[in-house]
Each structure stands twice: as structure tokens, then as C-alpha cells.
Amino acid sequence: MKDAGEIVQRVVGLTEKQMERLAEAYRQQDEVWQRMQGNLRQYQQIFGQVENTASHLCMQIDQSLHSYREVVRQGFEEVVQLADDHFKNASKRLG
Image (tube, rainbow, N blue to C red):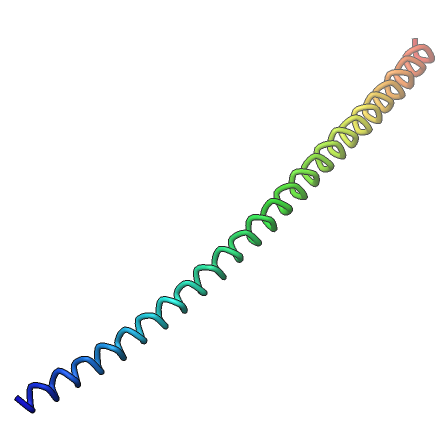
């Protein structure tokens, strides 16, 4: 009977230790989840800022390309007009 009592005491002691370890593991896991949630909120904010900045940058690039295209078009039209004028003058002189 004495052996059975000692065994029960040992089992109770081991069970208490396991419960303490499980409680500590749960606290640590909860801390990790809390940190993960905080990190995910930060990532969400950062990616939102990146998305807004990238969108603004793309709009600026689009506007710059439209402006560049218009400048090139006007320059080309001026070159064509000058060439036409030169050919007209040349044909008048020859003809």
C-alpha cells in the first residue's frame, strides 16, 4: 500500500509539472500570436502605403509619357511641315 501511495504522489507531482509546462507553453504561444497579429497589422499598413505610392508613381509615369508623346508628335509635325516647305520651294525653283 505504501508503494501505491508513493506512486500516486509521484504521478501527482509529474502531472503538476506537466500542467505548469502546458500553461507556460500556452502563455508563450499566446505571446507569439499577439506579436504575429501586430506584425500583420504593420505589414498591412506598409503594403497599403506601398500600393498608394506605386499607384501615384504609375500615374506620374503615365502623365509624363503622354506629355512626351505630345512633344514628339508636335516636333514630328514641325519637321514634316519644314520638309514640305523646302520641297515646295525647291520645286518652284526647278519648275
